[in-house]
Amino acid sequence: MKAPPLTCVFGVNTGVKDYQKMLYKIYEGIEGLKLEYGTNWLVYLHGEVDPIIFIQKMYKARSYVELFRIDYGYEDNPQGIRKPNSNFVSCSFELINTLDISWYKKTIGALKAIQGVSFTIYAPPGSEYQMVYFYGNIEIGVLMKMLVKTGIELLTMKYGPPDPKPEAPASGTETQPAKDTVPPPPPPPEIVSTSAKHQVIYKKPWGFRRFCC
Image (cartoon, rainbow, N blue to C red; front, side, top):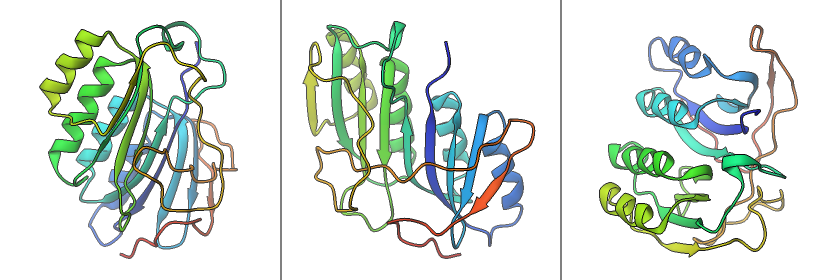
């Protein structure tokens, strides 16, 4: 089964020595990698990769990059373990600081516990809310244990068989989202590349604060 897509938007601190090597480590292992570079090194990334591995890389690279957003797992017709069942949960919690290890531990803990997970991490600098939104299958007892172990304090939660299937929200006018609403995603990259040779397009960013080096 083909892996679900992952997209990410992040800024790069080009003033830090050897930032190119850290970018290579982030890109390494991503299948079907697509990249766009906006002004002031705002990077738009799209590809197929284990989200836990990718988040681990982003946390290790926190001195070199500033995370704005990650979207993972949104599919039109999920199958197998990714198909919503009677233990389906949709929930959200607020991030305090993406430079602090607590957000990393909470997010990884949730990813490991929820089956067939789809999620959005929304953390652009200057935003009123920095949020994580999760969707997936998990038994209620396992969910409660995960919340205690990770220290996650949920802002919203809905549990049980889903009505509509979770889908990535449609693009629209950029507005400040409510805490319980997943903000619209940035436009996806347009240039396709292979894992052997990555092509890049330079573009102006849409709706995000410029990342100044």
